[in-house]
Image (cartoon, rainbow, N blue to C red; front, side, top):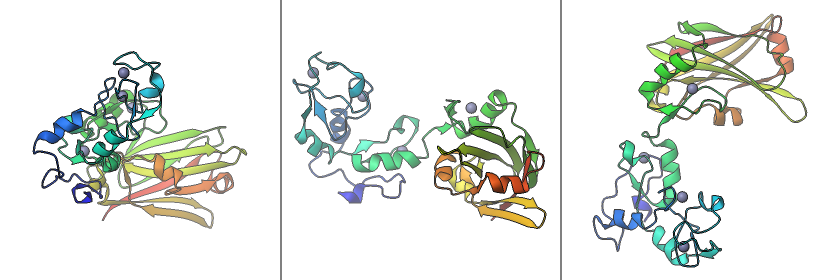
Length: 276
Ligand SMILES: [Zn+2]
Ligand SMILES: [Zn+2]
Ligand SMILES: [Zn+2]
Ligand SMILES: [Zn+2]
């Protein structure tokens, strides 16, 4: 069965339908798993109402009764449907955006996380902007909604973060344009429970993961007889910077280091972007 699955997260088209399913009958089978509330698929663990109707795990907690028969939702597991579900090839969530991949439900989430047809989210840090759209629409969105972000031209610039001593969690954002591309520079300050503060600096390309692989960035803090450097491949805004920040896969430093390099509460980070 796993021969049909996509392990790499890339779209893989099955050579033949899974055993037992007639060609073309698979989509019909998948439609049996459609949630009547959100039209997403009901995947294992599959719970049914007392009359056998299914609702997906996302919708279930929001409901007081079965949306189909208004009966009690109960806690009845449908093991037979779960078995069937494990043989069905489900279309990717972004099929309406052009993705033609069909996947076993166990491979579906992993594929969808990296599916090239997944819409791009607004790359600004913090969850305040809910915008999403195509890659081509990202720059127009930034220029119309996030006008206040400064853009500097050139491969070698200084990202100046002012008032780094501001209390609480703060984000500093700047754009850098070079090599015909736009990069977003992010400095994020996080406050831990014990009041300990950490800074995370990272660069993301307004572009796909493939495009990001063509570049490298260097972040450098420079002070009298001191230097702190980080070099890496920029993230694509398709994956975003939050997971990298969580894993410290970026330039990380604490308040004392920030003070060593800051001048009057302002911190200059040298940013160099190169093609590789
Ligand atoms: Zn649902
Ligand atoms: Zn029902
Ligand atoms: Zn897809
Ligand atoms: Zn936005």
